[in-house]
Length: 381
Image (cartoon, rainbow, N blue to C red; front, side, top):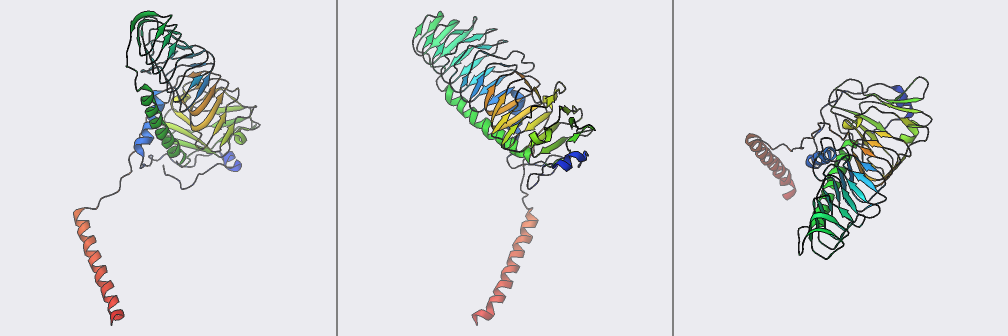
């Protein structure tokens, strides 16, 4: 598959043509392959990554990473993690609003203050860089760099004061010193990698086009049979789906991944469309909103992983797959079925001439020099 110099987009006429336009060639190498691969790996490791702030009243089944603040009403995390492991919920800033519920023994890490309260179902450990309030650790330990209030835990390790709390208390603890800086560093690394991944995928040459059913009511993404990576490219998602009643995506069974590159800074689904996708689509399909600053999915359910590292994402129904956004308002579950495609981009390398080649080049330079000297002789006379 070749990198294109400029974005190739679908016109309405092309979309109606409905034919596979190219074979799936090997993915081209990249000079920043480590970052691109890092972004793909992050999408495998997490169910939700929000680089800045998340406001949520809903649920994330797998692992969640929030680089900024977490607010909103009561919300639930790590409810059905499947094969994912590690810290269930990581927040770089403050956690406010309704109580956060963490399931399946998952751990909670907060760089700032945790004032919303947290219920650790399964006994996950809690680590807070600042103050902690209203934590029910269910037999596990709580570490806080600041004050601890209204908390129940087996052990409470604290750098500040403790009040209205139950558990063995250990003062003067500095375990969480530097936690916020560590999370900030991870946020920066995720931002670099995921932006690189989105940019790289946006440059892949399209291999497939969106088609429509005979009655025009179905918008159909069908990569057909093949191997490697299939690529769709849309200039305007809203226009492509406008007046259609159903979005159909035929699940890829032989591809490592299917990429749908969606152009446009503002993306909003038309109210007419319904997406009744097959379960597991997010493990292979990435919707890459590569230049979006705003993505609004309205009240529609969504299937497939979402890569929108520059966008404010708004959802009012569930998304099945990995979700990546700059900021997010979440009013619907983020379900597992995280991206699992076996993509790996090779590093672009500059060829180094062999010793014999260097010798020929040096001789060539000498010959050029002699010619130049001969050409200068008449001018010097």
